[in-house]
Image 1 (cartoon, rainbow, N blue to C red):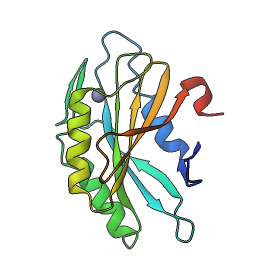
Image 2: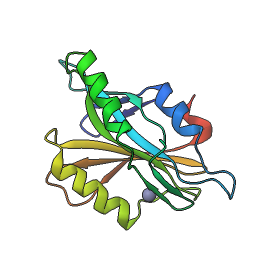
Image 3: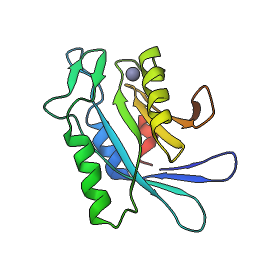
Length: 161
Ligand SMILES: [Zn+2]
C-alpha cells in the first residue's frame, strides 16, 4: 500500500506489516487489543519512506479489551537487531495497535503516548497505525506539531488491492 502525502512524498507500507496487523483485528468480543512497533527506512535521494517490519504482541505486554501497553523489551530488541544487521539503515517509525471499534479514532491515552514518543525521537516524524474492525487508519506525528495528522483511512477490504 502506498500513501501519497500532500507534498508528494510517498509512504510505502509493505504487505508483511499489513498482514501482521490484519491478523489481530478485534472481530470477536473476547479479542484483546494488540500492538507493536513499526520499523522502516528512508529512500536515499527522494525522501520517500518504506515501512517494512513490525512486531507483534509479546509475553510481557499488557492486553485488555480496550488497552494495549507495549511493555515487553523484545520489541525494542527486535528493532536494535535489524538496525545492527543492516548498517543502521532502519529506524523506528511508530506504533500500531488495534481498537475494538469499526472506524478507529485515537484516544487521549494514544495522543499522550504519541506526543511522548515524538519528544524522544530525533528523527522528528512518526507514522502510527490503528486497526479498527472495518478501517485501518494512519496518522503522522511531526516534531513541532501539537496534533497528529490523519494521512490515510482505508477499508480493510481495500488494503490489499
Ligand atoms: Zn488506542
